[in-house]
Length: 113
Length: 253
Image 1 (cartoon, rainbow over the protein chains, first blue to last red):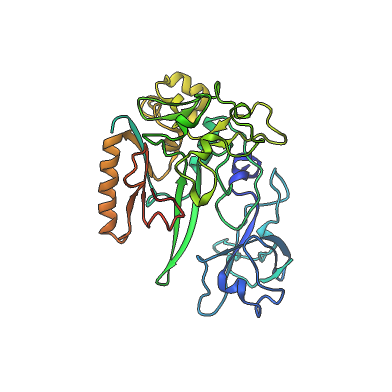
Image 2: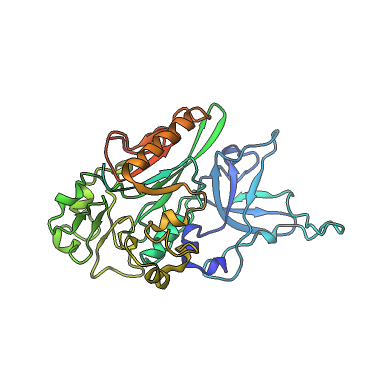
């Protein structure tokens, strides 16, 4: 329902990937060049890829030298505001005992489109 | 100071932007078509469709990142410069301090010979041009087309919610009412909807006392730069900021 409300779409119109300023400027990790705020980037995992806008922020920091990115999940192929779903990237596996999907932590590649 | 005052405590704001949506709903404004520009702030600035917006600022001091939120909007000056500037006398100041544009009298195509969307007298004489931009009043937003009968819009502190019977409110916007249907009816839509209770509305002097009390509390609890904004300029909307106004990109009087 969320993506069918014009007022909610206005507040956050597109899916995005959050990354640190250090990663955005790191041309070793991203050979396609430094990423600016609002650039279109491709996030690829072993299962698929999505193309979303980049949100370069001070709030994300590399942890012990490992870069992290955050992708929001709330988009899909339906509604007034369409966009790539984060579910495309996540592994389709989970813990059989707790029934919790193992979709919180995995490797991705970032490219500038 | 007599009259009413809106007091926004930015140290409690969680930037959910519910005030933006509630304001839009009460004023029956149409949502804008926006794009993601690299910040959570959306739309990027106030417009005829968004009389209030939450502005986001990220600062890094001493290895610590602070994410600052500021609910922008009309300040409702005690001595509004837009009021004498309006050649059509469309801007009124009520005795309770609310400064509002009368849409029946406002006609931006008649008050200036400038082309459409160029600054009008009320915008030019506004005291608060943040970042050198236009003043607080904005052109009415018309989706997919040029406005034929356009008006200037700005925050009117929901003057039409004051003295409105609860029964009439139910017809227009039932979610804004409390269960008893009375206590919340005379309050601005943003104040009623604010989930963390960062927005307060009441007698002007009492709100300033509360703001000063809050600043004193914040100063001894990890926010040494807390201050009341705007300082030394009487307005009917005041903020408690956790950093200096310049950090937020605000104009200092």
